[in-house]
Length: 329
Image 1: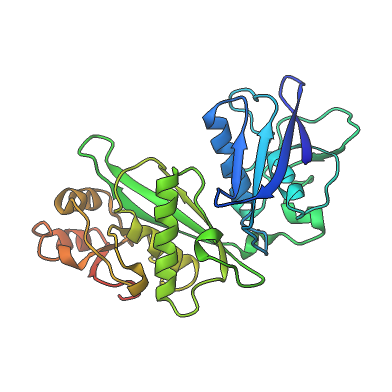
Image 2: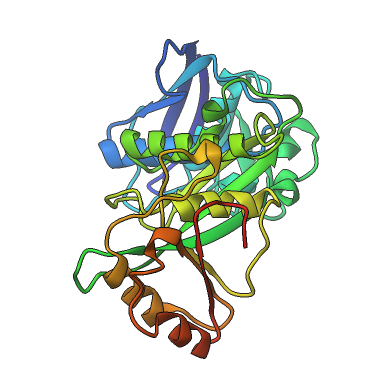
């Protein structure tokens, strides 16, 4: 069992413990704490994003991360303690008594943005995150900042429910090269913050689409984030796949955003299938498209597009293509 402590805003100290055990078909990371499911979800998100810049991937074990007390609302300094306990449990860094405070909005880059609380004296080694302190996780092992080796791309897709909350939502894919080929492609893809059904859909779509590429599998550790993690349907799939292809250098970048909607039951063949809601989604896309944006729609929609849709996009400085396969203009 590995342990890392962290000081809360009220001066109390919490302990984060991490235990490695055989995975046995379970999730790679399981988290629990006294703050309820929202805290556990954030703990898991932090741990999984921070793994992205590790050059080796081993999915044979599960790490159970627990916290002995709930931090206050809005407190985030415990995040570094979760990351370090997870790494010690898996042998990524030496197991040692640590006391750490730090938070980050860029765990997927392996960077620590700062800390809010300065721990008082402790028998444990003190670590504080942020510039001038522990600015990136590689420093713990004498390694350079790996954040520059992470390639990230975003694509947008229409979220349509017929209400005032209709909007374009982004999906972001970050990839980091592995030192050696991984096992199952789906095991190298993390989508923290999504429910289990949606995580599986994300992994299957990316694994299938990479199979379509020559030598596209076994080369990357991947983290996927959504601006809005709670949505229905599978119309996000084309945007996800295109963002992944851009991050891996397999797709040209647009001057503005790439806006895409579509799905597939056979990504391994590169095929793009239609989704429901052609007209309202086109109306939404047209209302929010801007100069330099590139719109990708299923080829099956070509005869259903609203009258003047393509011309209206061009008038706004955007371009459009209806595609039936990925990797085509």
